[in-house]
Length: 304
Image (cartoon, rainbow, N blue to C red):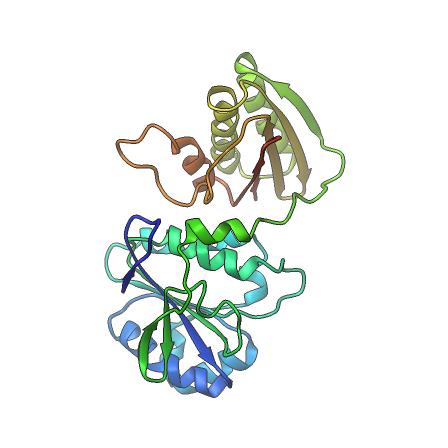
């Protein structure tokens, strides 16, 4: 394992370069055999040829691997994927999680998806009982630069040219917020309007058909975001809400600047005074995205 600068613990995150699906299966088999023998959970996010080759190599043991389709896993932003993998490790009573997450071209994915995912993984899993293996083509330009370690046919080596996440992420900004069209709610708010923020969010959640418990959790998430705008941002903000059957999207925007490269990815320090609201909002949202520049901050949270 290796210590990654800018994080608070040990990170086990490796690129796995390969030329053919069968070669990848050869490289992954010993790692998966060890994890399965220990009774550890294994998640494999692989495209069809790579998945089939690994299943063939593992034989009946493949039944104990959870296989997931890359298009489904990566339908959400890169930071969200990293948060979800970290949650797998936090939910363990014992043992260690193994995630195999293949890098591949996916229609509609931003160019920066994979480097942003790798950097977010290094931050989100630091100190957690999880190993993340990233199969990628031998010519992948991020093979060495966004992975602290590389797993080759002869063992592990350090990623050549690897840069710490806090340094490297500056070169990979998120894509701009998509235009969601007219909102169902558009509410400027200040300190005295936080109850209205909670009420309008709850009403929109019910209108979208979300379960009452889900609505209650998400109202708490939005309240944390709005409170942050009032207390730590510009003192006021703007709430916008979009609804669709089974989906609620809320935006909280203000004129403050948030200088947090990996918002909501790691729990706040027990003795720290900042970051608790954003962490809680992330934990209570299915997706949380943040855009911030000198003109202000936009946070969008989604629940379903």
